Image (tube, rainbow, N blue to C red; front, side, top):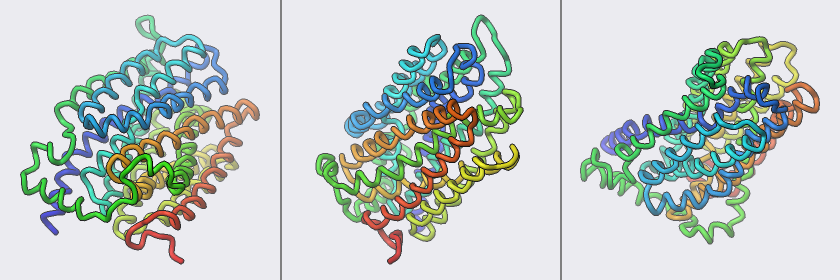
Amino acid sequence: MNGEHAVFAKAGWRLLPFMILLYLGCFIDRVNVGFAALSMNADLGFSPEIYGFGAGVFFWGYFLFEVPSNLILARVGARLWIFRIMLTWGAVSMLTALVSTSTQFYSVRFLLGLAEAGFFPGMVFYLTLWFPAAIRARFFALFLIAVPLSGVVGGPISGAILSLGDVGGLKDWQWLFVLEALPALVLSFAVLAWLPDGPERAPWLSASEKNIIAARLAAEPAPVHTSFLKLLADPRLWFAILPYFGLVIDTYGLNFWLPQIVKAMGFSNFETGLMVALPYLVSIAAMYLTARSSDARGERIWHTAIASAISAIGFAIAAFAPDNTARFIALTVASAGFYAAVGLYWTLPTTLLGGMAAAGGIGLINAVGNIGGFLGPVIMGWFTQTTGDYRSGLAALAGVTVVVAALTLVLGRLLPLRGDARVPN
């Protein structure tokens, strides 16, 4: 057992830092529009509704190509396909610096979604090729730490770029898109050298270590589905999408608007970047500690539902807080809660999936769920423009998260969860 633990730890240390770095670049390019909006909206005359729609339309492109992209990855291998994804998304993200009309803004955001489609579910599928279900939560959570980490790293960097002002004929927000797209372009070539298609292709594993991983994965309980087409007829898959849909509404409803909410508290662009990093820093700790607790207890449902409920409380307090300090602390709690829930969520539907069903099913869940990424910023934009205040939008997010917690408890009754991960009778 100690030898087995050492092998999985070795694989984790070799893969996770690089995968986190890749997703960090991905997520910064996806959400840096929230910082660009601090000056871009005024320069281009974008209203809250135009901005909210443009920020969210990314997810329609993502939705359309997500499943095909993940099925292609399963056939050609992660190394080649992740290289393609990163190269194209870096190029399209840089093109955002050239937009001057709302139509161009919508078009580039849609194309960015097409380019990036398949990256996240591809990485989730990739982890299932390396780590058994019993320890998967901590590795999922470690990988997903890249999402809040993008706020910790990207927030101060974005604030610093914006504080430079206009240079060389480009606006500050244009420099933001240009400079923050460069890491994706560079890292795309690193993928070819660093990311093996699976344990059997890893030159840094010995033959005995490869055999240990293969034997442990072969001993896993058989998945319910290995055929993607049969999976589509299982209503449990479609129900499993619902709580994720709500969590994605929360994630992007807050991520795309948090810089504007914080700046409205009276901070400069640079100070906003530093302040926005704090909720994400707390979220990283929440994701890791919740995942370790879940793995240690073999329990998924209650951990996910309670984290969602805590997030709902945070959103509700933020909506009605009497001052900026209380609102900022409440938003930090909300962020920590839904990020912890997202980190655990992916341990749930993967109990249904194996083979091509895993690739297609993970892609489908993420594709449909990420339509919530369109709705989140649109909901916030509509409420902000209608009421002139962010609070009503935050109250709506609180309601969404209450529903997520309830749906998670129902999902625990439906899925073939192992050990004591079910909701007790």
